[in-house]
Image (tube, rainbow, N blue to C red; front, side, top):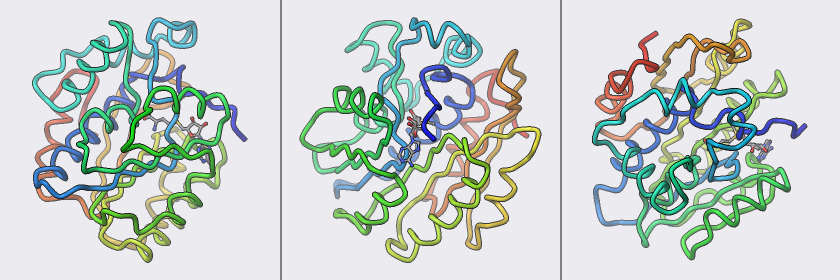
Length: 254
Ligand SMILES: C[S@@+](CC[C@H](N)C(=O)[O-])C[C@H]1O[C@@H](n2cnc3c(N)ncnc32)[C@H](O)[C@@H]1O
């Protein structure tokens, strides 16, 4: 099922929670000159227009990025570069945030299955360090693991359209840890009234950090918060999670 379109939700408080932490983790992982690998199971289109009919229809960015003054932080750097390149209404998805913050010695592998989203992604992130793959993200990341360079981060950001996807993410993470034990993994999940994210949490039989924020959206389709799981978090991640809580009104501690 591929009916989910991230354009309706880009720049909302949940997106910001994910993108703030992602940008900080990438900065921590690139402190040394050695290259890293960055992979995404569910990349989306990479670049969003907050003036598009989809974005204006939900108005979710108005409660997220448009309500927040980002102080000096890696996400601010990435978004400023995105606006400079694509205009004031541009908002970077995770692939473009990563590409903006990574270096020529780093490698990106981005999976996106939806044909139109894949086409837009390919146009948004075209460069020599980045490979885009039109394939299932779980299968694609596992088949490319362990990548070269071996140090790196995998972002798992599905749309959870199917109830069993929470369990699938836990299973995928275990398989990934067998193939690439040192990978840093960041999993995003929505907090919804049915609390299905607990299936993901219960299914994870390994050490991880869990970080959740809650917010009060006018119309978030029932979403009351946003959660992240970090496996093999780099040194300094605790500090960056705290920063994500203090960056603005939409980011609250749960
Ligand atoms: C939540 S969006 C990704 C947002 C993006 N990570 C960001 O933060 O900018 C999820 C994306 O996964 C895609 N998708 C759904 N199932 C997939 C699968 N099995 N493999 C790869 N991509 C998939 C959808 O088309 C959608 O674009």
